[in-house]
Amino acid sequence: MMWFKDTGPLATELAQSLISAWAKVGVIVEQQQIEKAAWIKRLTALDWDIELQVNTVTTGDADYTLGRLYTSTANRMGYANKELDGILAEARSTADQEKRTSLYGKACEIIWRDAVGVFPAALSSTYGLRSTVKGFTPAANSQPEFRTVSTAE
Image (cartoon, rainbow, N blue to C red; front, side):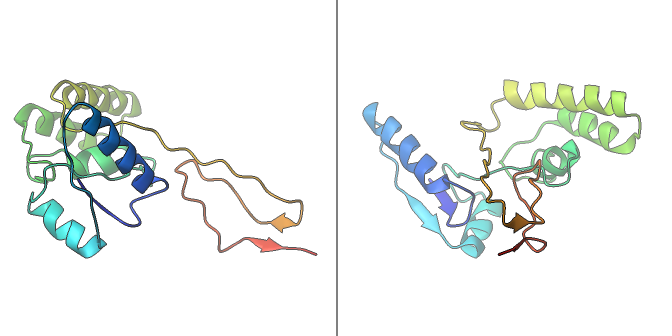
């Protein structure tokens, strides 16, 4: 299983937990925590058996993830499905939010049915702040912006 060091919060712990669970049923997994450049090269060359990554939707739009990872032309998973390609293309081309919601829902059903990926955990961030911290706003995508944060005495 490969992943890069800064994949996301607790990625190494999640990888070790999965590896430990598989070992209990006789599946031996070699850990490969590698540099991001090497990870990207191997990921896009489909040179992996299992890869681990955090998949956040930083734009708030389903197409950011679904259209980037699951189209046949993306070839990120070694997976191709023309029906899914059509649904994603139609969803991307409409501004009708109800239609987009329905189409992306259908896309997710196909991705789940075809077991393109396994989604073992949902990571969420919890923040605790002192009253002296100013300018911090939690982000829905768990990737807050800290440039505006300051502390007051």
